[in-house]
Length: 229
Image 1: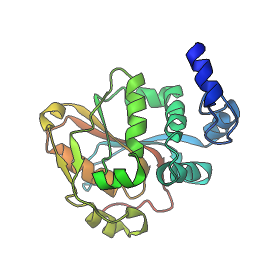
Image 2 (image 1 turned 45 degrees about the vertical axis):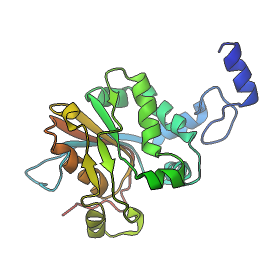
Image 3 (image 1 turned 180 degrees about the vertical axis):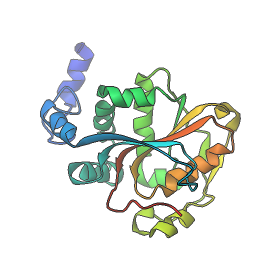
Image 4 (image 1 turned 90 degrees about the horizontal axis):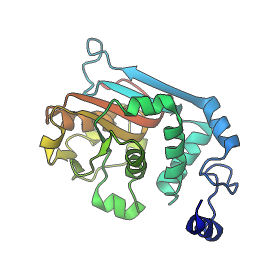
């Protein structure tokens, strides 16, 4: 660290996003080892012969949505803890498999929120991580102005599988779609439950004649995951 970094660290010391220990990084070695024991990094390829309801080609995720990961994602999304974006980001960029997956894509698009929702929460949690990722992976470009959420809808978490599908129907629209024509596009979200949100995003993006669409999430909720039909 240079002098300015040292001064900022003294005034605003970094701490591990999990145990709160004062650290140079946002994830201490002990907690990083703990997270690695629960790391999965599963990449699920969509078999269109068996499942014609999906509009994306593959879905990769790093953790099961339980225990410490569930707690941290909830804090990050709803408790004004934007700094946790750096904790998740650091884990992503230190993992060679995750970096390899990300480098297959040309463009990353965080699942958008309405202006009203961003104002209420203070930030779009997927956007913050996506920005950090593209600052460190040169081949991947962040596009925040292509997929727009222009309709407010109900929160997905308390809805049934079919209600989730209906709840996100036609809430997104494309803008500047020529930019992604023929490109490999990655949708980035925090948690994959039934896949309804990401699927609707992919459905909208496909209208731009993309080459490939993938989905990347921090975690997958195995307790609620069901096939979309």
